[in-house]
Length: 448
Image 1 (spheres, helix red, strand yellow):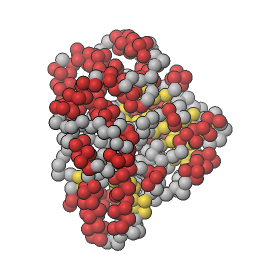
Image 2 (image 1 turned 45 degrees about the vertical axis):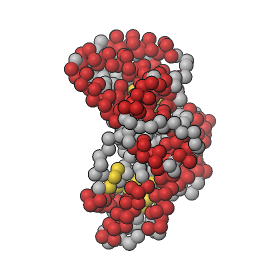
Image 3 (image 1 turned 135 degrees about the vertical axis):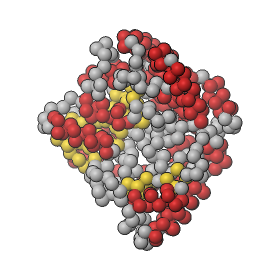
Image 4 (image 1 turned 90 degrees about the horizontal axis):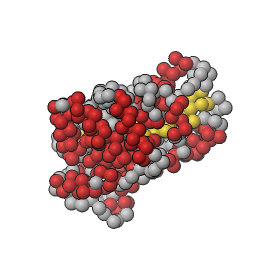
């Protein structure tokens, strides 16, 4: 966050806000004004997105999702099937981003504190907390999931010999942080390697249970894995970890925005995610949540002001582009209008459709997780094929963007491509992916 104004003023403003909402749950998105969302949608010429049908029914309605697509300015010469990295932000957010950036850069000494005090730490914080179903005072506004999770992984008090349980299928940046912790502090990493695909949730639970000991102080759980798409039985693992005195940190980068109640049912102690994935905010917004009783013991990545209290201890990074936060409000408003359940059902439907098409075209294709345990991310291995070569050919020759997952340092056996459509992706675009892949696989000397 950019806090290039008087630090004491920053603390006072944060304290005032914290006092106003202390002990209360996040407000509905109406904190931004329902009329604002109506105006944004109306300005874009979109019909109302309200729909009383069950989410599973709306998921199959291509006309509905085409209306949603109309709220975005997308690059038209590319079929983007790599939304697992970042989501485009809606046009209303882009408009707000541009306007706020111009306003800030014209008079930054005044606009930096003004935008923070009047929008970021009030309206935007409340809207983001509402999407997470947690109190606004329990979240810190950061830049991405890596910053959020590294705050915990590097700031959690540990001594030599203490154990951290993690997975070879956790995000590489988190594993890098843990490797640094091992080198710096002498902690012990107990790294599990889940089978691919996992036979069951019970098998995954048993794998983690077997790794957690009386010396385990922290357990990292990724929900789901970005390299396999596999979900974990987070609550069951967390409950076991707590019984042995360990605490649990969840990487929710790939699930925030797709669960109606994304944090508390997990039973974790810490949670970090990026809002620029499935919440669709502009790039540069992340969030850290932790149980209030843990806040005092976590060392911030950057030393805060001595007067900093609560989650404000983790927000100071110096001067930064403050306009990202106000521009996130329209994106969060759109998310609220669509609803996490509706979005999740749409992505599950598209994933099921895609898996069916791939299975028919490539009988030997290997999926890294069952449809039931992956949902939104489809990781598929074409035996013998280089995923990086597939990615490059599809982008260069067919204008289709996917992710090649062939350079996973923690598990070189993973050789999948990742296909991650968005809610507005049309079935015809998935058809084009399968058709293009069917052409390119033989040219690579591999038979499907």
